[in-house]
Image (cartoon, rainbow, N blue to C red; front, top):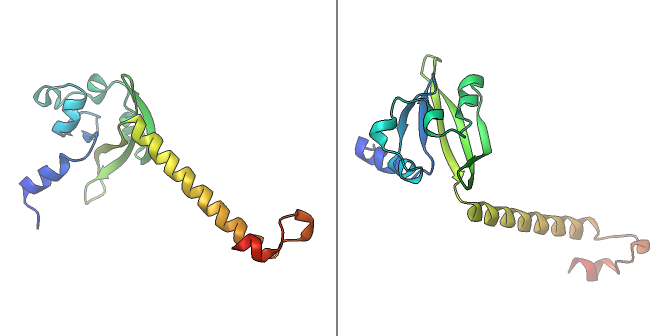
Length: 149
């Protein structure tokens, strides 16, 4: 079982981690996030999230109580991709929202997109190779043995 200290340590590794209550007031933010947006944790706890991060969409998840997966938003000169989940107590009472960034750097996002595009290209090529094993001669693709190998 993890200790409270170990849980806190793990939370420090999550980019863009913010937790708000049902009124969208910040109840937790890790130091990494506070440092990246240049705020003092002691000063922002209890403040409305828009007073601290004006461009966040966390309020939408508070209002709608539905997750938002890989949703872009802008912060100063950065495009961030965040995910937000509503949090519920064991009895089903809405508690608040947790938000974290999937990508906090455009270059990381761009590299990820390139990898996905590459994988799609490979899948497409494999599909075509399998689909055209016995292609009709009018396609001009040569015989199936040469094309499939």
